Length: 464
Ligand code: BES
Ligand code: MN
Image (tube, rainbow, N blue to C red; front, side, top):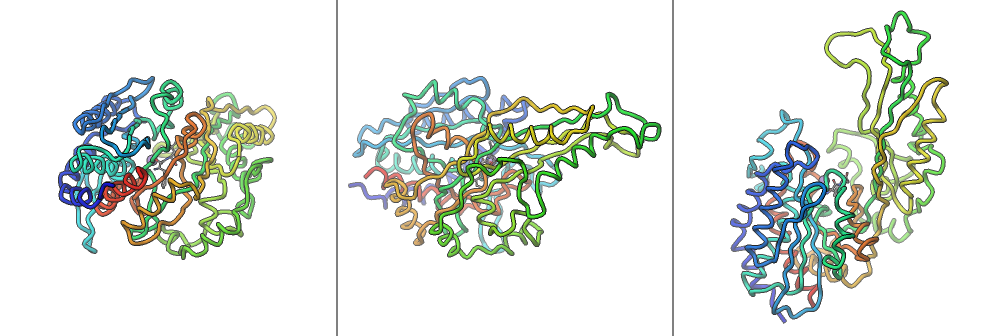
């Protein structure tokens, strides 16, 4: 039996060097949604491929129709275990805008000590997902440096399109199934409960996008000459949008709640014991009351209930000065978070019908080319692998992990299950105030350090 203590000691001793590598990766602006940064995405993928090859993995950068995938295998010549894990992360990041809101430039990582003595690294991707994925890679390094091996067989899959909906992922999983199938997928893209309490995420919401364009008059019109008679598509669209929710925050699209299940009593009780402060949660984002469905707690609203959100709305004249116009068109980008067995295709159809049913005569509506939605997923808390990871986290933090839900979506977890038949283990070290996707994103050095130490222990546990 291997002893993890020397491996943990190696991770501690190597922490500064690990941080330096993390900062190097953060300097590459691998923004996947903007074609102008395609070269930078490839550069980030190549950087990781080189690093993994340097560690002794057999790593390569694989072409896809979009940004490349990093795939790396570590055979584990001396591994005492026959177990095989697939580690998944994403090297792409969200766009950094609005740039003027950043206190330090997003791709010049800056290490700062807060008033509480806690250190943070600020950069786009500091947490999501570069800091998080590096915790696993640096844990692997500590194992290899100390024992010349990993305790189990490891395959690493790092994609560059997560922040743009992973269009290349499903075809890639299908085409490389044999190479990628493992006993369990490890995903490091979620949060801890708080800075002192680890967590395993066991629920992820699904996601569906749509874009609506309402056309009223055939051309932009003089709002005096035609005003009073001509339909204004912004008004039509706003009416439709405001119809989506009723006064109790419930979504009114017929059939929308098909497949939404009540939270089991035991789970509700478990969540009740978490001492979640709704006031604090709202206060941190400058709010005082929840806008969600009445009668549900905020944990339920964000972990176990579906949503419809308008992400953007546009149309008409928004430039400087005034313009007396009735626009011809107005559009909105809308997304839905899904739970239970809600079916994205059915919801897309129901939503489109809901819109069409509300159109005045003579007006028309068009929807954007449908991108595939992804359903929600729940992961059993009772698997041996999950229990083993929970024990490892408890050893590291001296505190049992919270079994959490996540309001966000990681569609690949569904794909691993449906295409490769694999369960996932979602262990992450992010914090609620990391500001992922926002200006001044950060990751705590403590998250990074504890993350490395946790993966060392989790790998050890899974190998047994
Ligand atoms: N890391 C996030 C998921 C997440 C969000 C974990 C909040 C913990 C807390 C992930 O990278 C993400 O942002 N996913 C997107 C979906 C994707 C298809 C654009 C999301 O949830 O919006
Ligand atoms: Mn993200």
